[in-house]
Image 1 (cartoon, rainbow, N blue to C red):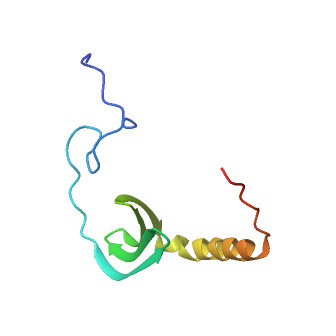
Image 2 (cartoon, helix red, strand yellow):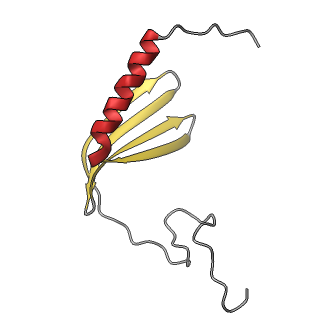
Image 3 (cartoon, rainbow, N blue to C red):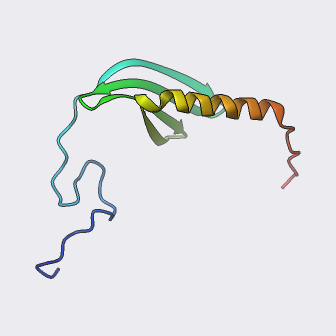
Length: 102
């Protein structure tokens, strides 16, 4: 590496590591409420948490050992709920397309 080059902050790096190689300090998170729901072969864990930056909802999907997580800051929960309600309504109102055998 040329002396004036710096690592890109957009390159892939291990979780919890800053672009310059130092690990991020852990952030204290308090769990306020947690619920799990099983839908077909997927388990969803909804966890309301709080840290020094505020409250947030963490939704973790576990499907066959693979985990994916999204985090929604508390100020966005009402908008998230409204949009989710709209999707549920659309799913119930729109006719299902037939699935062709593959």
